Amino acid sequence: MSTTPRMPSAIDGKSASIRTVMAHSSAVRQAFDTMYATLWSNGVVDVDVKELVRLRNARVTDCGL
Amino acid sequence: MSWLVGGAQSRNDVLALHAPLAVDHRRLLDEIWGGSVDARILEYCRLRTATILSNQNAWDEPRSAAAVTAGLDESIVAELAQWPTHPGFDAATRACLGLAEQYVIDVHGITDTQVSELEGLIGPDGVVTLTTALAAWEITHRFDNALLGDPSQGDN
Image (tube, rainbow over all chains, first blue to last red; front, side, top):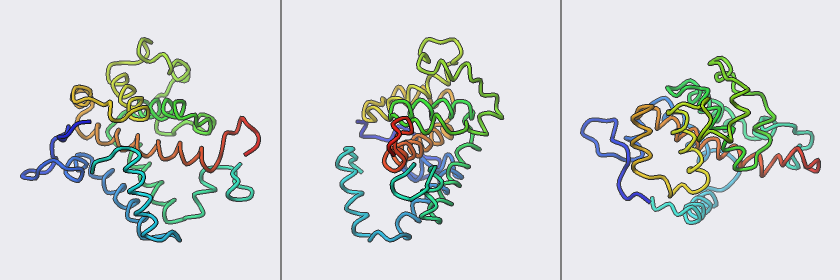
């Protein structure tokens, strides 16, 4: 697994991160962020349960972020 | 048919249970299909990852309208499993399909060189669009498998 970003930042003066790299495709990023926000803020599943699922998923997929 | 909703015949029927999420999901897909990556390549990747993740629903539903408009050739689609050697797939398409396969089989196996080469072929905006598309389709394939089942089994 790479320990450094593989893509440059799309924003001058900002280091590469998931936010600044995704900015290369700003419309896609915005749509993704909107859907992600809806996942967290809407629906009948409690937020703490969602967070447990997120963390468990990260563990299973070995996501260090 | 889904066991989650009586009478649900499709992914959209199930997604309708959470209307705001369905709207946002649709919008994300629209942005992906309207982005900088050739829609035919995106459709090849969507179908290839569907095969690897055993989502027959993705093959049975209509092809992407954007890909069809872009000239998707079903004779090439039929050769998708042969993409590493079939002459119908150019360098950019092969690079995208290579990333797509690695993404769903073992994402940690993606290499710096692989991403660098891909960036050289489709640009940084293309890499971001493709990678987001792969994420969206992996979700879709797993969603279908979990909630719609395999139409060929007849018991879902």
